[in-house]
Image (cartoon, rainbow, N blue to C red; front, side, top):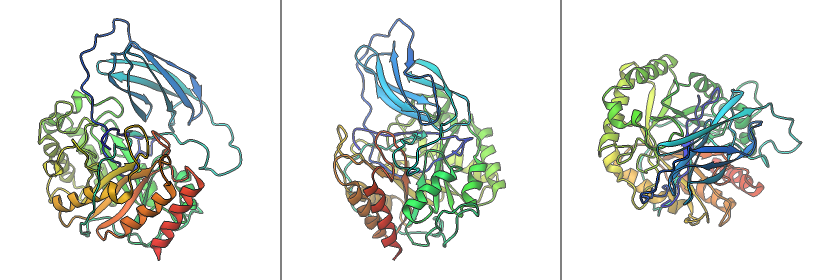
Length: 469
């Protein structure tokens, strides 16, 4: 996506993504505008909330003033983040949903350059829900971390071989004993899910599984550099018989792309070594296989670990990756499988070859992409056009590596989402080296949810059934 990007932030649920959330690829994000110099406001920045209390899922309108004019900004509510641009008078109005949290009060913040403001929101117990589908109708809170779909570029065909280091197709495995969710499919093309509640939100995962007729064999989540390894989340996913795809983001989620404490140079210099070693030690003790997706979508410009962003020099992403990888391995975490996951390439994105850490550093390659539909500056893009060019590029850069779609979803606006869902599964099923995909089941910049309509949910269910043979 040449013009927009969905920002994901660290999802922490007690967090299941402290937690993590996994998802698939969207077209590249909109390129950052170089704003003309703007006068710095003299009044302090401030935000006002439309409501100051409510249950998880409450939609809050945030109004800000006193920010620099026509400047990129990030509004965050706990783990949920949203990217906006201020007006010519340094104001903004946007809506954001309250994410799942164990806290009774969370901070809603707005940050633009050096100016920021915050307000408190009191989280109250949810009232009982009316009868009906547990997943249809009620808007799901957006994730944090870490990120949202990227803008959509022009895609093309694909081809890359699978390897034994990729997540092995799970044999039919039941969900936890207490669950009535359907079994995991043994089909070659694996189903993955990322939901707002993160890896321990078994109710969300079971509800999605019931809609689709099978449980996910991959559960994805996001965690930033301010949280410890989410061992409880990993255990919860393992209890379902699924694999964890853990997105590890070297930043403070939602705090913008300029974060001097999290430059690639600071990582290489050892500023975070104690923290990184703690992850390696904890993951080694955990012992089971973990698919670790470090610094994803690095070919875009919406995260502070990308080359050319946050003061990062060319080549610094690879240097930081190698430093983190080697430190984790040195703690004995040989159970970790490393997943290198760019966004689908788009005009202006960084060339993938310059960002690839090397065959000895990577076990699985992944690609994130979204169909933004007819959103401003976007166009409806079919699955082959969205992913084809990126898959081809991955096959050239990382020959022989197994491939997964790390984050994927479609808007309802601009075409038939039901047809798009069927085409997605058929296209990926035809790629022998693509081992699975992770659906980003959130209502955020668009309604990415599987059940955004009954037709969407039915089409994806039918496509998955067909691929099972």
